[in-house]
Image 1: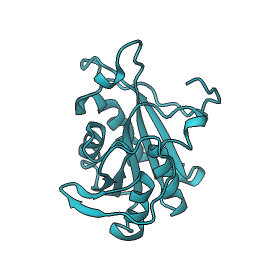
Image 2: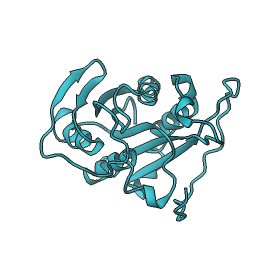
Image 3: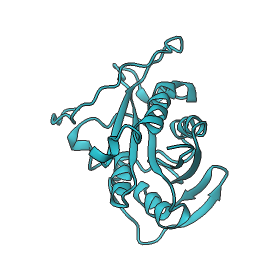
Image 4: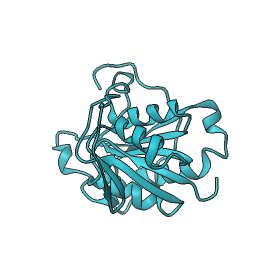
Length: 198
């Protein structure tokens, strides 16, 4: 897919640092149209609104609604001719099977699948380790490995036939605090954990 047109959404809100990092990274590969919530919509799952207000934003569009509202408005009206939907980058992992129905990030990708548009949800796994995880990953550079993974998949997954086997991908990338560590970790295909105590 040369110069893909990408609908970018998330559940942390259009002004979140992870969203900005992914927007900037994916813009080097193609045209990115933001259709994202006005504010934090974490853990709303596939909630949908009867009506939403939409306004223009310097990155695209901001929606007073959920991530699913964003995908419906984007694919239904605002940018129906996109090649791919990317949701993220979420601050916090979406790795357990129990969370897949709760996550706004993953739900946006699931919604895109119903429109028959390939999708990727991207989350940054932060192991707080006793620290306040909200104080971590506060700069776009902190999302560099997640952005690299998403960019790689946008550039290669379609050509490799990935979306012939899967409607969407749920990608979780470990947070690396040390800015000197430039090499991302190996990408591995997994199955969602069935443990509840994530």
